[in-house]
Length: 252
Image (cartoon, rainbow, N blue to C red; front, side):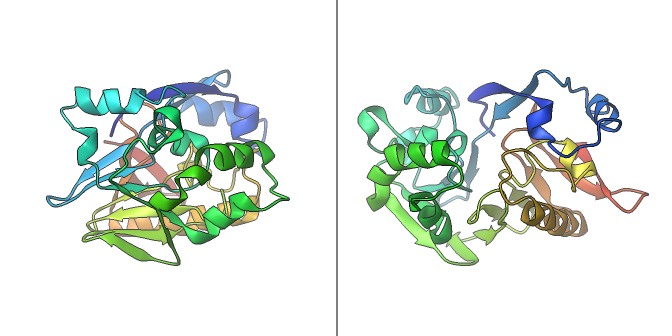
């Protein structure tokens, strides 16, 4: 996983329905402050042996930042042949937009779910700021994108699965049957223990909770390594069943 940026998040935004009496202890268990909670941005690079797949190339508004991080890791940005976007919020895709608005990875196949792409083109979008960014930044790159329906294998050993809620076409990325990138199904480690909480920016909270619970159960039962986009430190770990019938996070 690549660390390319970080920004501050407020607890009242991130945990909009958390009971006031429970939230401080939940944050303290993971050494998180309420103000601010630090959101890190971790694009994931997957080497399959025949493909280099970059998942959620978020970053900063500097179009060179992610490419600089890749080069520092000894990776030629031109060698990226597949870019996967879990959804259309800019902190998950800004790094695939290059200088002048062109593609940062011009030879790469870019992948997103069709329902997600179409969602951001709707005139009555419930998140107008995100829609404006999408239209300005990603719509000009349309010819780079392959739009998918349902579950799809994008390269041998890597498949995407629908995980709607945070956005209508949100997807997760399964890697070789042993790992998964969860995007914003789990925007904070706290959600592993409190899957029924949701954020102010979760426009479809009931669907978010349903998707999260299903995915946490599948991850724990399959003992998958989990890669996240916003957790602190490495952002990787495992979800295990807890004695109370829920789940807990074990960092890698």
